[in-house]
Image (cartoon, rainbow, N blue to C red; front, side, top):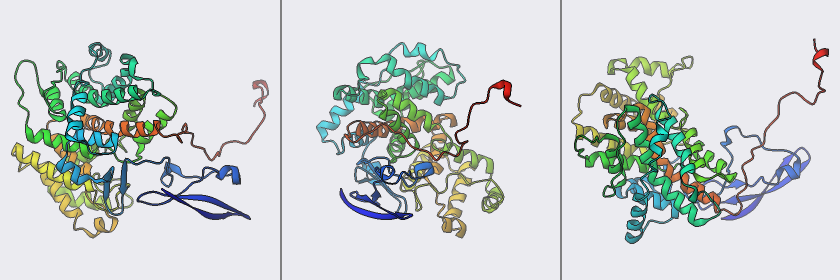
Length: 430
């Protein structure tokens, strides 16, 4: 990373600040000493123009539609790798050797079991609780069961906590699903891969054998890869902010789960699917397109465009192909929902309005259809997102903890409330 300087004027004062340049992407102005120099802060709602950290994990170029994990293009990883290899890459910065991969898979697999008392913990929750509420509570509760991996100053404990969270998250997610159905929990099996294990824990029942579809397992693994990390998004920033206080890793990931639950973040695929169901038939599409173009109508087409990507979402192409593979496996060719989705996709890629505003189909457009076809209820969509994103959260948390320049997060504010005033006794108030 190289550094130069840049100057700007505030009134009669000229301020010189360091300009830092990373390996790729925009340079940043280091404003760490702005307040000391000028008595002023910057104002950036949503932090959309603020770099909160240095990171070497994920890079996004929204204008060009690029997503890199540790420098590797997302399409290459999703097509040729698997999720645990991706998790290793995010954690350690390099692709594993065959020996390293085998060892990592073994360690994660041997951490998929959860403490048996966790089953009784679930019984304290209502069965109709939203699975994300259950997941948030159970992930936070892990710190009460695994005291030997909460010391963040100990590298070995950080490593064990990382393995435990990546290994146990699918087990907790499957338990949340089973609990909502009133079905018995299914224990993980060590001879299955990560995604196959998760499918079995979700769909198997003790009274009959469950045959795992290799197409479903590969599709789910790909979904996990595509959602594993996405730079400094809201939930990742939440994990980092919680971690900056010295909170234990289980609490930090629970905070990330809570943030992900928000419909503006992790609930986008659910919103896209609900929109397709609301449209109902291909004949209704023109009416909804007209509503989307009407500035006075609050209706929005969900699953199109992205806050970061101003080009085609690089994950969407892979997700589209995965979606078709799952539908072909199921023999679904005449689904009204699919017909609406495909007709909308065709319009988005040819209509001048969509092209001008760069409203391309995004990953959420296809993932909602895929997950529904695989049998997951809408309430589980964000839970699956959390299972995948845990790998990225852990990698980001680990990077932050090991960064010597890390400080506790403390954004400033522009105060617009009442100025200083004297207290008035209640007897003297009108």
